[in-house]
Image (cartoon, rainbow, N blue to C red; front, side):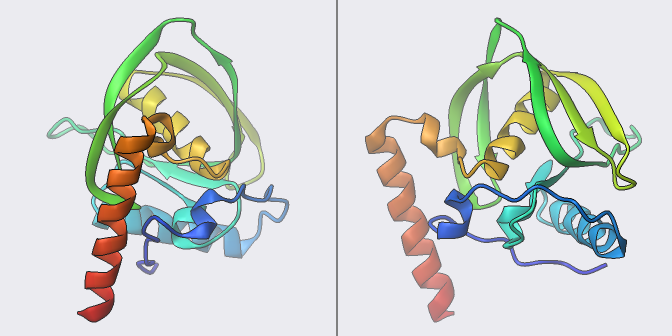
Length: 173
């Protein structure tokens, strides 16, 4: 397993839709392991492959936050929302590709997602609460969409300028 560098917005790869995964071999397992390690190290609760520059429909997440509760790392390949509740919930979202920036985003409160596991087998689950927010946020990444795309233009521009400044500072360091 290896830590991967997380792309920082603005990066054109973060705005491109990812490709469907067709090869369920050892490389995919390595990618999933690296993504989980990178997500936990960041620390974050979700990470999509495009955030590490891999343009494939793979995401990892683990929204267990309770002290003493066993982690629940999940790897979702080619995920899709197949049902969304009419009820909405608002959550203050952040993103590993947009560090230290947070904003309220409204999304369906519950979703049903279908995906393939690391073995290629199909799976389906209903998500609610933080899990629902997280899986929708990560699927957005696979579609080339960021949480700031839900914000008003002025707020989005402010955050983008902050990220450009952060990237310049990191390049000089």
